Length: 187
Image 1 (cartoon, rainbow, N blue to C red):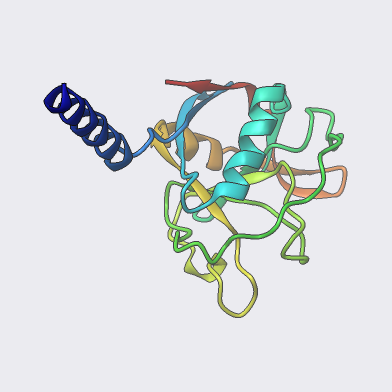
Image 2: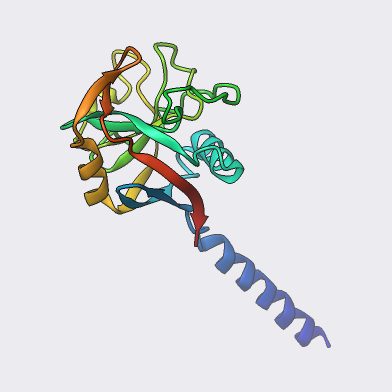
């Protein structure tokens, strides 16, 4: 009986150690746009606040029918806050900037957009299409990287190279709206 108990305890401890050593799979989100699909992988370990915030917007359907409202070739594509009519959507409260998380603004990463106040990010994000080290923490607080494109960077390149105009006082707005038709978690 004692041997069986010891064997069972050993098995439980082994299984617990195995589970602890196996990291949880990072969440993936599929952005379905009018230009194609973009799959992103979030980093809840290094960017827990930004990841939680982004997923709450995804899960609520917030990003459906928002647009990429600012695209600059060789820099980034920004979206997640405006409708096709250039109306800014109501957001949740801003989150704390976690730009000092060790992730860098390199090509293919997603970062939280913000105002000059470092802790002002809400729903808007941008996808870097170049290595933008000047957006990392340094002279100012930086921009928090929280995800990376794992499929569809060719779609991002099409989006960022859209013909642009000035619309309702905003520059670099695609002439033909680039709509996020949906944003959903995928396995």
